[in-house]
Image (cartoon, rainbow, N blue to C red; front, side):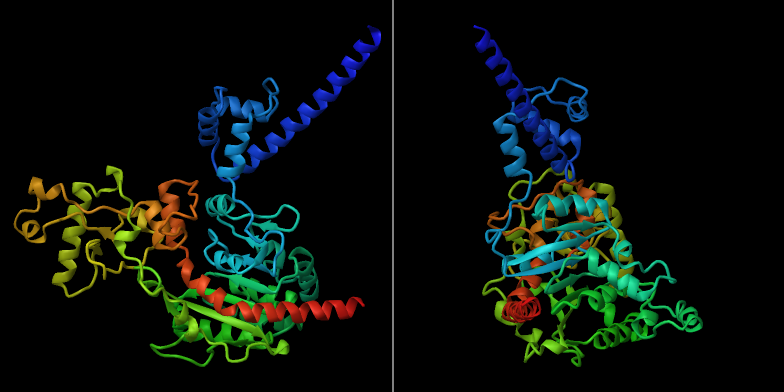
Length: 481
């Protein structure tokens, strides 16, 4: 009997250790989910899946060890792990190349490069709400991926007295090696504020002077330190004319100074291949400038040109109707007061000969193209309003007609914005998670890129990237031999 009691004690201790280990693993899982979702949402979902009466309070107590320890059920774990967190890409862990994602937003540029076999090894994004959406949708390998919220902490650009070589060494240590650099950097004017100080200190000139004080400067330092084979930079179309062309001039001069050839660098005018309109892929007019650079010393650019992106245009572009949800909550319909304000505002400016006003889109017209979705869409939705049958003539005669008021236009839903920006395919096959409020979602989609544009850029670049990866691999093997 005594030996059984001893064995029972041993088994009990073993079970407790295993159970405690399982509980800790489950807490780590929940905390990972909470990087994207709030506690109230997670508690409600767990309550629906399992048998425990989860609330925000009980979840918080459980996480902090202030309630009875318990492991999650299999159903609860499956819900969190399989439904609420992103899965690794299909080719994981057999990646063809590595890339980094700077000023990442919610990952619009990343998607295409992951689809051609790339592994994201570093992400930088400062907006906490955007980070929530990013982490909810993109797999970040805990062993091979770094997440950064303030790129200036990596580049050390805030301190003008930092030694340049020290900054480059810090960048090299903080950012993993990669073949491709992606960056959707903000458009900012350049200033000569740091030049005189560098002159007096006898420090380096070139881009270290001219680009100082902008976030492009951080991108340039990373390119200088890490020497990626290829970069893809994205910005608004007006970058070319910003600050009377000075901004674009300094950017192109910097990239040349760093030893890179930019595709279609000398092209200009209305047919500039660097300016790509999203309406070629989805029913939204959204022009962006795309700078694709190749490391000169690798001699891999060849005849690459973005004009060839047309080979990836869809045979049949989706329509506005394809983007729309079948059922939409009434809260997305404009209120009578807001619709009247927008209506009268547009009339006032039309009378003055201005083009200001709302953008009413007819979903029944397959040729309809929406205006550019902006980050301010959450305010009134005026740039893209979905026509629900509003009678314009009747509106002119009697705006407050109750029957016509029933057909007031509506905003797009966040889900429809995800589709219009290409984050989610129209067949719903690649569901995009939206863990934030409608207001934040509108801001995020309005600040993002048309995803199929950069999927096409990635596909166009694929053979060049693979060639670069092979060259750099041979060079590493030669050095280590």
